[in-house]
Length: 200
Image (cartoon, rainbow, N blue to C red; front, side, top):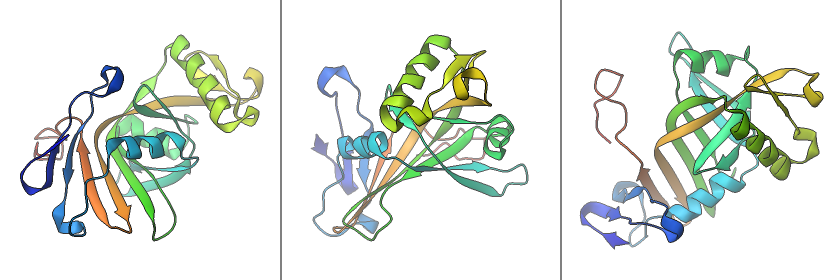
C-alpha cells in the first residue's frame, strides 16, 4: 500500500486475487498522524455486524431509514424486504441507497456507510446460497425457502421477501479514538444527469 499526496492511498491486489478499492484519508476530519483505516477492517465490520440501517429515498425526495439484517457475500451486502414495504417501493423507483453499521458509542471503534445501487437477486442457486448464509449468521429463526425468485418464510407458507444486493460505489469509514475519516472508492459515483457531478 502506497501513500500519495493529500492523504491519497493506492491499494493493489489482495491475497487470493481480490481487487481492493482505492482509499483516501480525509485529513480535514482526521487527527494528526493517524493512518487511513484498512479496507480489511471495514469489510470485517460489514460482514460481521448483526444490525444495519438502510436509507432509501421516498417519492417526494424525503429519506426513509429502517433497521434490518444483512449478510456479506461476494464482496457485497445482501438484505431482504417484503415487496409491499416502503423500502422495497422506494428501491423500485430509485435504487440508489446507503447501508450503515457500526458502534452506538463515541469510541473506540468504527462506523461505516456504504453508498451504492440496489439490485434484485432472482437466481435460484444464488438465493439458495444466500438463504444458507442467513441461517449461518442469524440462526434457524431466519430460515427461508426459495421459490419464484424470492425468499419465503415458514417453510414456504408464510410471506414473501424480495432479496437485494447493494453494488458499492464508495464506502466511508469513521474511526473513533483516534478519529479519522477514510473513503474507499469502487467506481465513479453518479454520472452527470443522474443527480450528481460525476465526481468522486
